[in-house]
View 1 (cartoon, rainbow, N blue to C red):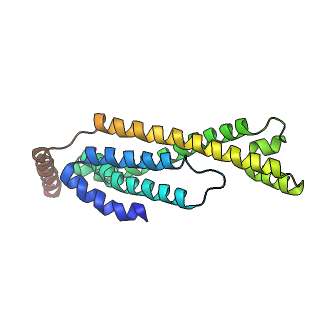
View 2: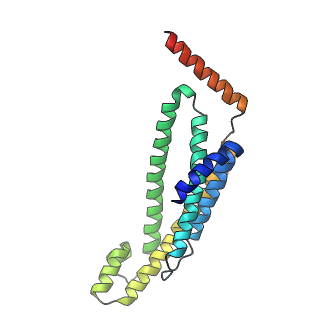
View 3: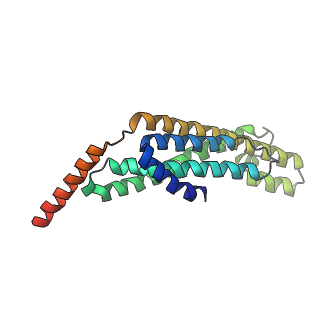
Length: 200
């Protein structure tokens, strides 16, 4: 919901302020949301994660139109389809790679945080740990598994926040705003190319 709510706002701001600034601001807000997700404890309520996800969504909503605009603005008008396909490919590859990296961080930190004398299956998966503890009436193992999982999630979100902050810094360095003259010249070139194609 937050992403949808802030998408239009981000597009309006990007047209007035520029893609680079809005991208950096949106990614910084997203990183703040990830930072908030490091705070919950095993017995915390859902309100803090819900607020953190709303903050992340608002950041995504601000940054997404600006990043897409920056990408499409760098592609000539006659190659807009290629730019759109490239945008989809980048999003899917980034989601897959990010999920794999963060999943590996969570898995390793969870296993390291579990007691060394815990059953091997419990050290690999919190669901297995909870099933084992319920079957054997071992409340200590369940508490240890919840604490280890919370610790692992906190570490994972720290890594995610640092990665997003790095992306925000890179956006300030790498993104270039198009001037109005350049945009007009590109539009004229696209019109001329279409006219030439139609005349054939």
